[in-house]
Length: 259
Image (tube, rainbow, N blue to C red; front, side, top):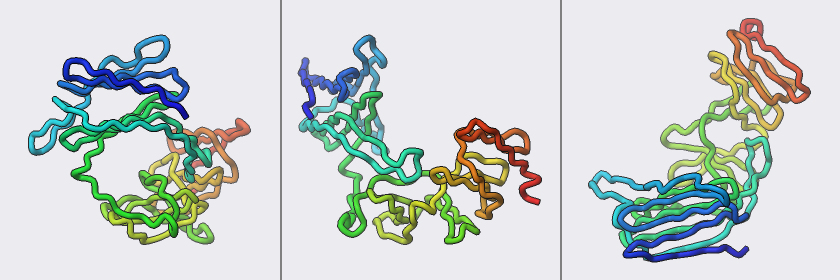
């Protein structure tokens, strides 16, 4: 893929242009007395020059008076597995710009067809831990929030969440691992047995995994297996109201469900 790129130097400041894969969005990144970026489409300005800066505990301010020593550009077009999302795969397509400064700070900008993102990369505080991709597959992402793992006969659900020592990650095959900060694997979970919460009614939750939904107590005890997929849900007083894909309503009365 060919990426159009521009770099302009003006009176000690450098300006970099980043364009979306479809050519409709443009960002101008300016590095000099301050670090700013803009966003516009083919018709209008979306975001006026906005400053990026970070102050560290030693009073160092990152983003002011920076000089760029290295520029990296690339284009990415890949498919990411999403084991708990409504789609099994998500296309990740963007143009990328990484600016490395003379003081060791780096920043990465990504331009998608429908928006942009950036993140600071600080080599001095990053601890890179090796991961055996041959044995465990390519890591795709961390799983945020609290999830629930069903036992073999779905008579109980175990709460899974980051506890300061362990977190959940998944690989390109959809396998989910519980790992520590050094990426040592503690437990392995099948994707089909991991459920994410969608609606909470007092101490009870509606959890789901690609169309398979359960109504459980937050401690993991199942109350009801919902034999229908739904696209929207709402809590009204002591009732859970669900709208399924056939536009039919399903009511769950909490008092009746726990009797």
